[in-house]
Image 1 (tube, rainbow, N blue to C red):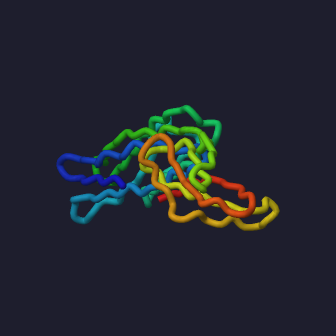
Image 2: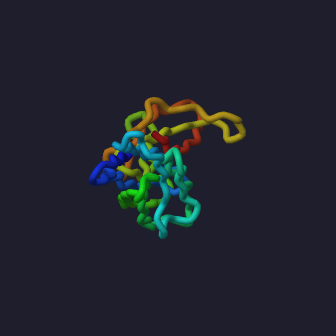
Image 3: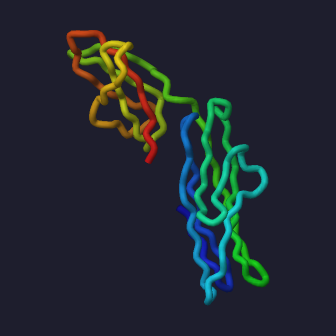
Length: 175
């Protein structure tokens, strides 16, 4: 989240840059305070140049943007503005960026030491869930616990071999 304080000098805390997979909903709350008594009403907006379909709640400061495969390889510069309704109005802005990478891609699937080993492209710090099913016609997927938090640009999960064939998928988890 980001914070702004209005007094004689306005200040909006830096907003963290993000790297996400395509298909990720980017959602976070900006917060602001006003030192005036009584406090002024604050409103949030996005400066020109924000991605199409990105939005921010005028009163809530909640930023949201549903990324898509069409944005893969892009780095999107976005600036949040918060403005009070004082006379004259005071405002502050902070820029941040969202880089959109492709969805997780299987890099290798091997059998070694009695286990099936799966490696996929990842974003460091991102949490992933591997799921499996023994029959593609089954309605439900089963979780392969625990979830994996990537520390590098690829992630890895191992599953002891079972007596039947298995099908796997990798899900990107949102915080």
